[in-house]
Length: 279
View: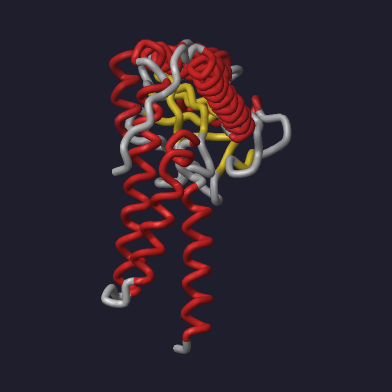
């Protein structure tokens, strides 16, 4: 490499280094930029130093000192009490954002059980007073308005009647040409408690089809179960909208706290920040 190429390369390195020095806090830059640039010129002029090794060391030291100087400026500019208050406000903002999500989410999810609660309760009561769950198919068909409901596509509520072992007896809804059944644990719980309200995934390990289901116990000489359910597709879409709005609100509050802390910290500085020695 000739002298002209070396001089051109050296000039480019010095220009880039001078630009990088502007990343330091203003007081530090004003006091130490010129000596640091001169130190780099001297190092570049020293032919005993390998150029690649010098560049690696310079970049490492630049990154390290930038972090240290900005941290030192932050500590001297923003008092611990101010930072503590900012953290407290950030915690309050987080709690508000969680409440803005959790409360509507619970209201929407619980509302997804309507009108299944009435459907399951009414049919179970009729079967309690009749010959048993053998009439479930007839009762389910009478409740249907438009034939068999496709659980994977329809938003209409549906009814399924099971015997005491959890085997489907009748339904006005199907999934992939068959009548699905919830896990056995649901039936065991309903045997003991009389009712269960559950989010049911008829297709295992799938989050594309989730059913808001209400399961009622049928008593009497022919016991069994009545399940009323409907797809949660629209409800979950609304819950996702609530989550996004709560998230944006949270980010907005954090941004406002951060900006307020930065502005207040600079306005309340009563004495010039001492210039730390270069690291």
